[in-house]
Length: 334
Ligand code: CP
Ligand code: NVA
Image (cartoon, rainbow, N blue to C red; front, side, top):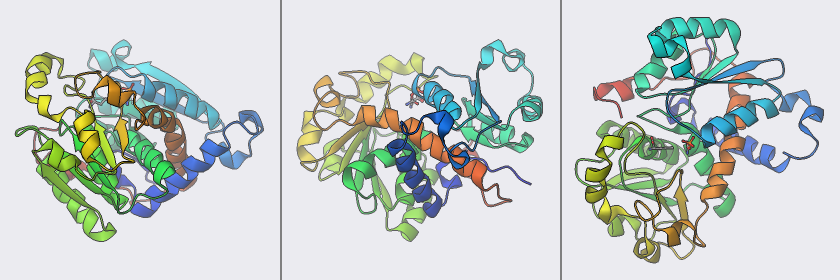
């Protein structure tokens, strides 16, 4: 039996994505009643199972929400900073995958290159989940869709405008958003756009779901009439050395009051966090009435529990893709 992985947003079909969001809403609504130990087994799909949570980069939300989420599903989380393991001393990802597969029932990993996740999944006999790579952040996108849907009651037909770096977050919003039938506009400085093949893939998905993707260079033009305004850091983890030069290039893409003014009056303001007030977003907007950033953070817990429930509910053979071609085609994976 082939393990079911979640390495990229497109490892779920549109229908599966909607089912995960439904489950996430149900888990959120019932979280406190009854207590975790009294829940029916159906809501504890990880009972008797262990999940390794491997981190090669820092994390607050992902680490905490997976740790708590696995425990709430009845499982045992094992959180590991890889620098303290033999992986940090050069043991191969393949040997690590084989060894961990003997101990745990799933591996959640935050790393740099997407290719590392693909190699881990290829060598593991248990499900592998992308907890952020340079290329994508699909668990965050699931939580974001849950947040938008609970505020607006739907996803299809809404326009999400992302301002800033065409990074992992932009990639996941393009793919997950179009899977849900949304229009996703990305406004980035020239040279910092999302990968072309991701935009192309998003438009292919959109052709089937009614969504679509558009890359622009004018932030206000992109923000006009948007249902959702989203931004992320200008220098991602691993790009700290470029922070100063990026701060100059990205100034016109700050999510500020002007962008909010041209969007819909009920626009949702989103950021995956951590945020830098007065850099990619003004404090007034981040902390203002349109902001739903802490709902997004909370929904990481519910969406990931729903995702893990799906991966364990019905292991399938061959239905999940790895997204390997997409991340690999460009040579340099973000
Ligand atoms: N949004 C997000 O993934 O946050 P962390 O880096 O704190 O996990
Ligand atoms: N693009 C950011 C997301 C952090 C959650 C990064 O990779 O650092």
